[in-house]
Image 1: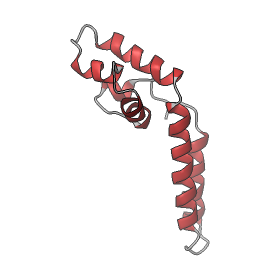
Image 2: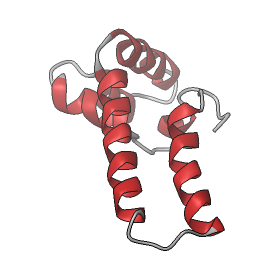
Image 3: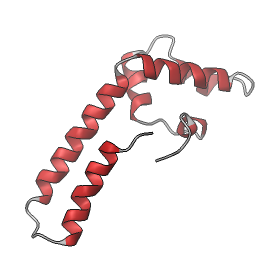
Image 4: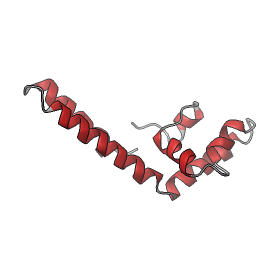
Length: 101
C-alpha cells in the first residue's frame, strides 16, 4: 500500500512472506536473527530478510495464497444480490492482487 519495503518487520509485524520464510527456511533465518539482533545490527538483518524473501519462492507462494483467498471471497459474494456494495467488495479483492508494493 505504498509503504517502504520492510516497514512492517521494523514495527514488529511479520507478514505472509515472512511467515513462509520462517516456515520454509527455519535454519539460519534472517527474520529470527532480526528479532534477536542488537539495535545496531537490526537494519543489516532486515536487509538480509528482504533479500532472502526476494530470492526465494515465498513471494510467489504468498501471491498464490492471496489469489486463492480472493477467489474464495468472490465465490462467497455470489450468494448476495447485485449491488454497489457487492461490486465494490469484488473490486477490492482484485485491487489487492493488482497493486504493486
